Length: 369
Image (cartoon, rainbow, N blue to C red; front, side, top):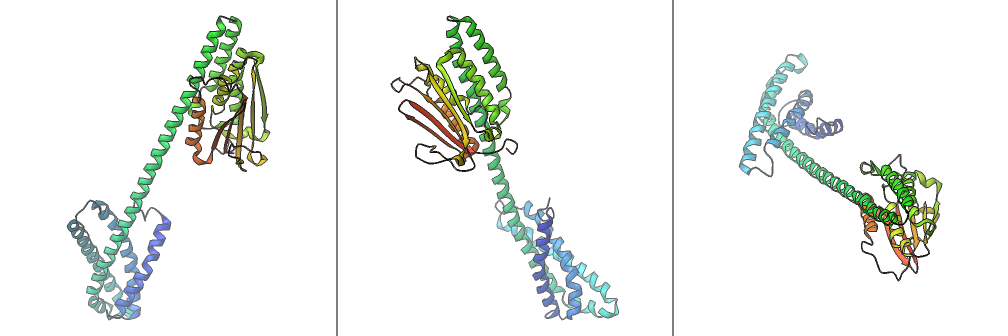
């Protein structure tokens, strides 16, 4: 589709741009051309309107002879030939119009006067067509630039979607590996609890089905997944695992990436609670950024319009780091960067026997997201 004809606004601007050209042509025909002002006016208006649409044909010759892939000779011959042909046709149309108008008494002598102005009209037509060629090359350049930018954006979106799918795919196998190890340990200690854990694990995995196709889910659904996960772990740890939750009611409808909190809670259990003989606690807090509080290790505070999530647990700082520590945290960090870019913040710090993960992301309603 022609870039001008396909957009009503562009067509209007294009026709408006012909007003100064029509004024110049009116002056040339009325002064050097030897025509009266009335005769020039009655000829210029319809001729400019016709030629405005005739010059649009330059779009197709410009596409057929790309500016960057064609020699100067080919460009010159193609467009000069086109200018001569189009201008010649325009002059013939003008001659016919002048003959028709000369049949009226008020425009008697128009045909003779117009014939004297034919060379001037022809040269003007050639110049105007070449100007149209330059305009269409500019439009082609803009169109190619927009297409290239669109391809880059599409490539980035596809790469980001692929990255998100790959990162989400790491979550379930990682959790499944740890859960199966726990079940294996329980089978020799308490077969009943091992069976209960298998049932709860199956329930958790059932809830995660189909999450790979979603980029965002309501926070209430994400919390339900966390509760299913903790149900599995409570079978293993019993009273050794204590969970405290402080969830702002209005935050339940905000959208978050699926399986965002589960790796954080799993990290707290695997690298914190499991190493404590007397057990430990996990604190989960979700609030709006405008509620205040020092949220990050650098003292920065979350801003209004941000959803702040904190996962804190106690741990033994003297316990050597287990292999695989940090996999879940790195996964969450990468997913936030892939989904939100610089709009999300992720902070991890250990203070004494307390380990705190804080993340802030745009507070978006699930429906709007």
